[in-house]
Amino acid sequence: MPEHRPIVASARLIALCTLLSRITGLLRDMLLLQVYALAWVADAWNYAFQFPNLFRRLFAEGTLAAAFVPFFTRTLENEGREAAWRLLARTLALLTVVLVTVIGLLELVLLAIWLLATPADAQQAAARSLLLALTALMLPFLLTISVVALLASVLNCVGSFVPGALAPVILNVFMIGGVLWLGPRLGRVEQLERQIFGVALSVLVAGMVQVLLILPVLRRNRVSLGWTLAPRDPQVRRLLLLVAPVLAGQGILVLGPFLDTQLCVLLTRLADGPATLSLLGASVPYPLHEGALTALSNAARLYQFPLGVVAISLATAALPTFTRLANRDEWAAWKAQVHATLRASIFAGLLAGGIMLALAEPIVRLLFEYRNFTAADTQRVAWLVFWYGFAMAGFCAQHIVVRAFYSMGDVRTPLRLSCVLLPANLGLTLALVWLPAIREAAFAISSAVTATLTVLAGLRLLERRSETRLLDGPLAAGVGKMLVATVGGAAVAAWVHPMIATLVTGFRSIALERTIETGAALALATGVYLAAGALLGLPETHLLLPRRRAPRSDHVRPRLPTR
Image (cartoon, rainbow, N blue to C red; front, top):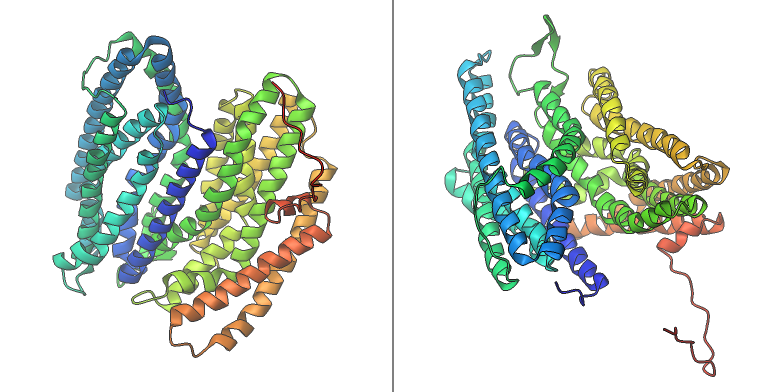
């Protein structure tokens, strides 16, 4: 085990790889929207691609991190490498058998749906066939993405972090190749239904390349690979006892986005298709139109960018401190740390949310409005980004609240909150989606409401567990000042953007025009927000405006710590 490697250096490598992954993912999404825009082809693609994403969240971000990695690490430390490699071989075999079985069953289900469903007309039959065919083609990627996640977690345990962090970059690069090179070779410009299969094939190839590239890294780190199916092995059974509850909990957490996807597809009307659908025996008009799922998916990816960079980083860094203080029963200090981190997360979330409220349309236009992606498409996605702006503070704070529960060794309460609020989220979406002024924004609005309720309910439950007051006057006053700063920053951005856009009109490059007008307005909004926060006495401004160091005398040498 390379224990001499500094943790900070490893964290920097991971952060750099993650940033590269985000950038290549954004380029991938930009190209997909330019070619396929907001049409049923893109909806079918996003529907099919949700399954690999669900399994990535279930395994890579959930089960492996929470159950397998600690168990494997203890085996490696306490029983040695041979026992660890034996556990890896048996886990890999069991995972492969389970996933192959799951993929086979899902393929049979898709085939049954294709054979038994009776669409109203030929257009619906073609649309259904495209969706089912793409989904069936993408299912084998579940195996490779899960195997890569397992092998990358093993490399993390032996001190090699970069290969696993770079795996998404490989996927994004191959998908970009699928859009630009393979897709056009499968069909002409107007045959987008054929071109999209080039993107799906590129995903399958990327999965195999990811596995092939990680194998030599395993050998360099002296990891011995094997494949031994032994479900009755005592170690495997102990691991399954750990994995089962975590997998069930993660399944509940990913159920919400999965149900949103199903509902969005169910309520989407195809172009020139029937105007009504049968719902509970009644004929009702479709509330959504082609491209709804694609617009929703890309708006979600835009808000997830600042969420992943800021909120998740804060939550990850804070968890060890929360846990240490909770274990010592130092609840006053625990409350202070939770308060400080929660305020910092809300501060960052309100900044991002205010920018999304004021500059949703310019941001979407800058990133996506080229080629087949029209101005009407921009307005459609921007409307969703606008509503997600109201959710940013709740989304960011939610990660801190969950880590606070984890610091107490409580993984069940966040799960119970999700189970209680999931029906409320679904019900609110169903109530709002029929309103003409809202439509697909219902998914964003219900997410904002659910996230806020989760934070408030979670803080109340934390107060009972820790016997401390979290929802107190100082927190309310701090959030109030942040809201004032948010209004100021958003108002300035909305006011100056049209003037900047007028000044830069006429540049030879339309992309340069949009970059200058949007970037300048964004920078001004951030500056006003931070300045207002500093004037209001918010200490969180030092997150982005570092404190000025006091000058140090040349005649006084710093005192070194003694051992």
